[in-house]
Structure formats: C-alpha cells, structure tokens
Image 1 (tube, rainbow, N blue to C red):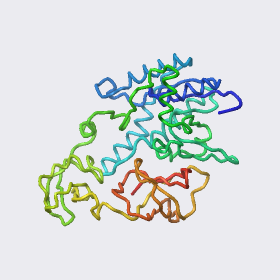
Image 2 (cartoon, rainbow, N blue to C red):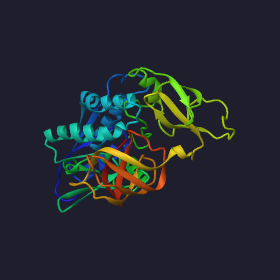
Image 3 (spheres, helix red, strand yellow):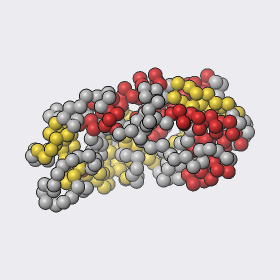
Image 4 (cartoon, rainbow, N blue to C red):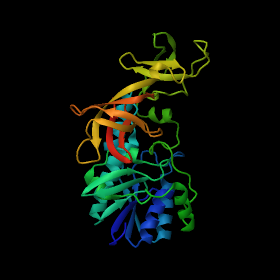
Length: 359
C-alpha cells in the first residue's frame, strides 16, 4: 500500500493478526477505521464464547494504535447465510467448512458493503494471503509464509471482492507479526490464536450440534456389512475420523486403529475400517460442484495442484473439462479421506484459482 493515502476499514477480531494489520496501515499514514464483527449471539455469554473478551481486546488495540473502532452486528446475516447452510450440510451427512462461507458471505460481502457505506477505498483483514494486480486482473496468491497461508479459505472470493481487499500480512511471517505486535505495545502480542469454528469455539462439538439437530443412532459396520458397533448419528462423524468410535478390541487381529471410511446415508449406517491406509480411505479422484473461481474465467482443463483439506500439501492433479457446473480432479497419488462437503481448492503455482465443494 504505497502512494496515495487511503481510507481503509480493517476487520478487527481481537487477535494479533488483525491488530498488526491495523497498526501497519496506520503507520503508513492511511486513515484507518476498525470494525469488530459480532457474527454470533445465541450463547455469547457462556464459558466457551470469547466474543466479549475479543471485543475488549480489539478496542484496546484501537486505542493504542489511535484509530476509531465500531462494533457491528452481522448475526442475522451470519445465521441466514452461513449457519443455516452449516446445519443443512451436517443433517445431510456431509462435513461443511463454515469458515470458507463466512469469508465469502460475511467478511467480503456484508462487511465489505458496510465499509463502502463508510466511504472506504478498501477493506483489510489479517488473513495470510497476497494479492497481485496485473492488467486489471486481481490474482489471489499464497502468503509468503506457506505454513500460515489462508488462501484456501478465501477461494470463493471473486474479482469485485478482491478489487476492494488488501492483505497486509501476506508478505510477513507469523513470527515477525508477533514481534511487530510486541514492539508496538499491543495487548494481543502473545494472545493465543483462535481455533475451531467461530460460533462453536472450544466447546464440545457434539454437545453443540445436539442443540440444533436430533440424534439418529444406527449401526456401525465393516465394508462387508458385519455390525461392529453403534453410532450416535451420521452427522457427528467425518471421513478419516479416528477418535470417538468406541469400538472395542481388534476385530481382525491387526491391532490397528479404526477409521470412518464411509456413510450409507439411506441405511443410516457408518462404515468403518482398520488401518490408516485402508484402500477405502484412499481415492484417486474427486468430483466437485458449486464451483467458484477467483479469476474472470474458469481455468481450462489440464494439470494443476489442489488441496482437498486445509492442512495438507498441494497434490498434483488433472482438472477435467467443466460440465454443467461440475468438474473432476484426478490425482497423481491417491488422496486420503476425501470428504464430501469440504472444499477442493485449485492452484497454479502460488495463484489460487478457486475450487468447489466435494461431492
């Protein structure tokens, strides 16, 4: 952000990343306004919800940095656009990623619209990603710090959203961000990064989901149909899951751990196998739909790299031709626990091209 000074609205979460984002932009001489987004209010006063402390931390940072800050309630938009989708996907036995939808629908739509009403030139967030503009096209790029890169969660952003967004931390390593926070005297310098889904926080996942979806127990079976246990509801399990299966003994004598390998939705049965590298857990292809691309046009069929979950290395793959809004990825090496409802994100080197929802 060199050259002319701009009016920039920063999404402030009360964490160290958005704190440093605001601090850097202020130091560069921009007119900075902080906005704390309250996206959840159903139970924001219980032991697991940190929203009040996060808001206080954001206000403390704004005070030190010397910027105005507002608290804006997007809870209705979040419930309508993100949480309803989250419940629908889980009730259908899939495993959604609400953080992806939150970025596309709240942070870079509802929040972006609000910032534009404030007369902003652009918005800034503490995401670890980069943006390159070339000949009028905005490219979403991986962060310099690949261990913290968050382009995976931003793959549904489109040109009009990228045009109004900046990511000041994209060229900075996380260790340096904490050092900058400490040097600026920010109270979030040593604050632990938040984990998990924002509206669930650190609370037990099953306990949370049971408030909204009825349990529906059923059989836990081997691939040959033999019953080895009972599940409490397909929505509580995801492919590749190891913990919480409560299957006693080594049924086939191998002593290897058990994993969820599939779901028989019509029969309400959970398919389990033993061994991390069981053939049912390894897939050479995946189909994806609900496609979204960061560039003005969809990528051509051909060789790329992809992630089918956030914490994984890029995997070489071939993208099929896109037909009726769907595409297939064929991987050079079989992929482990490809999970319906999650996102498959396509890359051309450091450029995030977009992706879709795994079917």
